[in-house]
Image 1 (cartoon, rainbow, N blue to C red):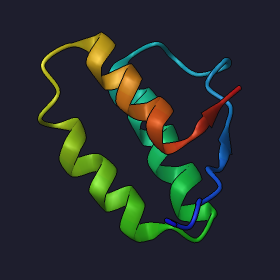
Image 2: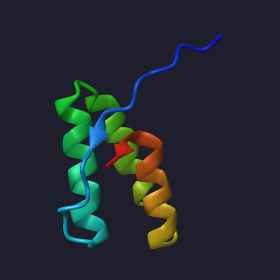
Image 3: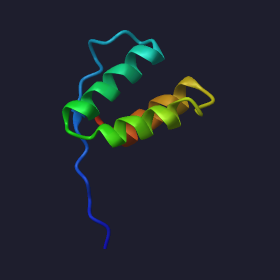
Length: 66
């Protein structure tokens, strides 16, 4: 059985809706949670996203959005 990794909680409600601002907040949350490898992985996948919605869905796979 695969070990379940807890996702850090990341507040995006007070953040600018710009995808780059949101992505920066997600990366910062991952790094602060001691997951710099996941932050790098997230950034690499983010640049392959074809739309704003796809980018938001990716963010939600890496962090718990509040």
